[in-house]
Length: 165
Image 1 (tube, helix red, strand yellow):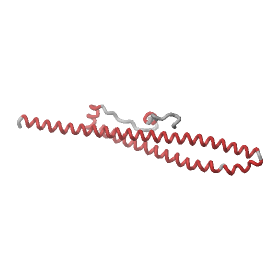
Image 2 (cartoon, one colour):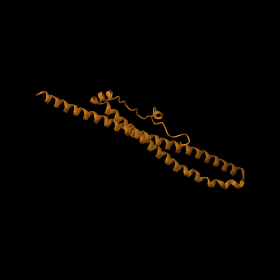
Image 3 (tube, one colour):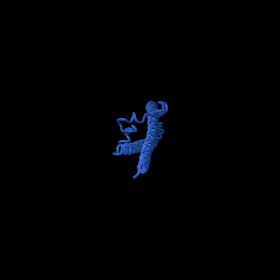
Image 4 (cartoon, one colour):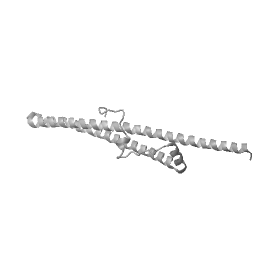
């Protein structure tokens, strides 16, 4: 083979190598974007869940205070004993709110699970043998899983203040 044959072979190999590098980088970037979207979804569901829990706690305290006042009036005055019949609607609304809290908790947990699955897929992809070399060259790092230990750090509620939650 003449020198130009080796040059063509070298260009073909360089082309395949460049294609593989671009494909690797694009896949890593796409997986990181998916992880960021999942983190955002977890943050939003966490904010909704905490907001509902806070409002439920305030509502429950207010209704308990109202019930206590009604029972005090009923016990103090003889004519107030009929007031107990109106209190049943307060407790029945808590069943609906309880269902809402449970559904938000389930959505929140499923969002965390899908985030962990995306993180696992990403970590496995970048640590496989030939790609680990490229990972070191490009400086990609493994993502952290969301668990109880790093939940607060990995799902910070940026963009929300305490009045929103």
